[in-house]
Image 1 (cartoon, rainbow, N blue to C red):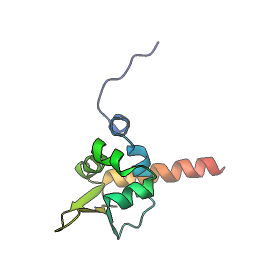
Image 2: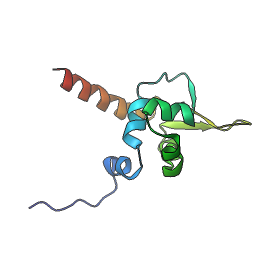
Image 3: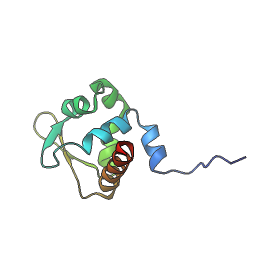
Image 4: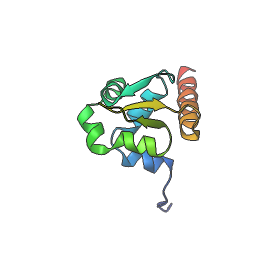
Length: 103
C-alpha cells in the first residue's frame, strides 16, 4: 500500500484553486502580447467570473508569476508572463498531452 504524500507542490496548488486547471489551460492558448480583464480570462476558460473572483484564482496565478496584475484607474487587467517558469512548464505540459492524444 502506498502512503499519501502530504507536501505542497504544483498539482496540489492547481487542485486547491477552483477552476485553476481551466484557467491555466486557457492562458497558454492566449496571445501573450495582450492584456486581459477578469471577465475575458473567465470567458477564455469557460468558467463563470464569480467562481474566479471568489476562489481568488487569478491572484494565485499572479503570485506564482504566470500573470502580472496591472492596476488601472478602472478595472485591473492581467498580462501573461510567458517567460515565467510556471507558464513555460504549463505550456510544455499542454503540448505534451495534446501530442500524446493526437497519436
